[in-house]
Length: 84
Ligand SMILES: [Zn+2]
Image (tube, rainbow, N blue to C red; front, side, top):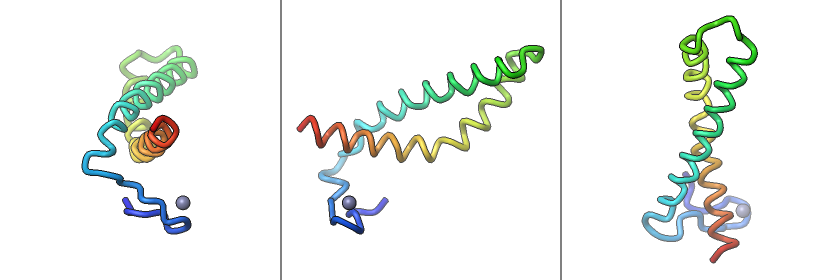
């Protein structure tokens, strides 16, 4: 991750451990995303077993992990900006 925004120069990491709180947002985003993926998979393929839906949902979720990681940090920065 870059230290500063290339356009406006905003410093992303304000202090060591700044993004520790983003971990909780990442967990919440992961739960929501995985729940949606599993629900959609089960809804689209009702004749298949739940294990099969899990086998489809887990790889799809793993593909989305880098996106969730970045968005959790973006959300954290916004929360931090508006709260403090
Ligand atoms: Zn910027």
